[in-house]
Image (cartoon, rainbow, N blue to C red; front, side):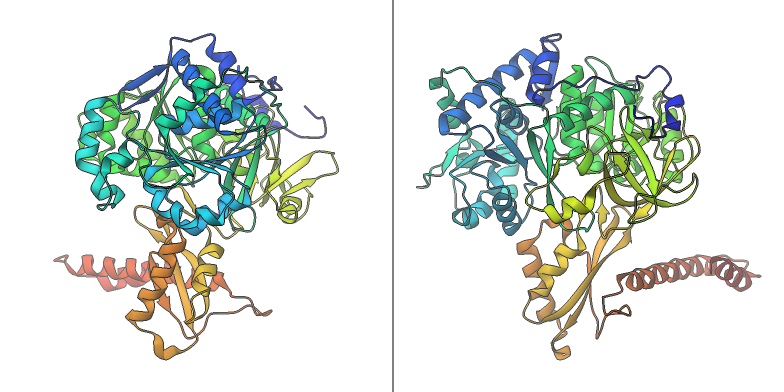
Length: 615
């Protein structure tokens, strides 16, 4: 540890190591090495289809040979546009084994977003879930992609579940009635398209590749590209090295402290998300646990998942835990097997933490809800509530070898304990930079006087004298909705491209279940066009160009938008206006309830007093 960096949190590590030794090889090599100690453990469980580590490594080898057979070379980019399926994680490790870079794409991205990700990463090879093919076909000729390997989510399902999936989900999920459903279920290409190949046909090509595969990857080499908003809230490709991913796996296992060999972990967070890839997959595969793969799930029926798999650990977003407390189907369930519960992806309120801990105790779980913090730029998780030490409102203490400072905004000047400033981070999980974006990389990764490179998060926080970190808010314009990042600038760019729009501004507004959703304020060139037809046209443009989860929940036409003194849109004014509207709605509801009370004595005075206190 550098003597120039203060680390008061280390006294709370207990028996946990403060420093780890990180190998100088690939992410694949790490799990290959650790798997040799538990080859018969179950690596993953997909709807009851279980594979041991021995079988998993064999699948990776088969796919890595298939990749070599179609021409994938060292440092080529293989984009993986998949939900949490075996083929998704096998493709990631297979690419890594041969020294290729895996670019992880959200499969619900709009066609223009997919095109952007493929082009910015210079992708030549694409593994894609079949329901994205309609979008991919429209943009593939505008990219450098040579081959598209198509896979169905049902590819690795057990026969009975696969049959049920075909019977109940294909027509409504894929919405391709003009095509043969079996074409998509089997992942085979019946169309005349020499760029397309089905999964089974693709894997079979590897049988003819008999050369030895040399793993040339080192720790410093780029292993994956994930997409994040960075410090300015516009999507960028984050370059993560093998060292980043391996350090994240090792640090999470060491710091979490409540997971062990053979434990089952629900892989809810998606593999195109840092939390999903680094924690739910790579970390679990590192320590010999089982990743329970779920391509999608419904929080309202989460009780069925818990009952079926009995996981030892659940990593999710706050909305999941809120939904669990409201699910009556849990009422008579015992969760004694659940020993580790971690919240990430969004802020966890003190009230929800208290409520969920009481809920866990009621259901006989020995766990408590622990909050983690991180960014894609540092493999998603670098700070976590210690196992047996919680401080209200705190996101915990840094992982081994990770160091936090709170500095004056825009500087490297550290502020005193207890004073708010920008959270900055250094350590082995900090990214190599943004792909093809030197300006944003220089702004985010800065070398300080101590000689270390620090990640400037754009997030506001406080550190107390014991090193506990308190997250206070995001200075960058980003909305987090049910754990997904939504970038206002990205939505505004799409809306502003509409021929009738003069300007727009997007902010986050509260939502009872998703926590936050996007709302768009729009100024038209011609105010006379403020009608349903124009709004429908704007919505159609948004829905074509943006992923569903980022579509605005509300739209509002304005004659003008508030401006700052230098002429920029004052989005904070819009946020304040919405907060005041939300308060008024709450008071309206309170007044309606009080009117129903038979004894109305003093009710008006009570409301007036409460409103005055609130102001």
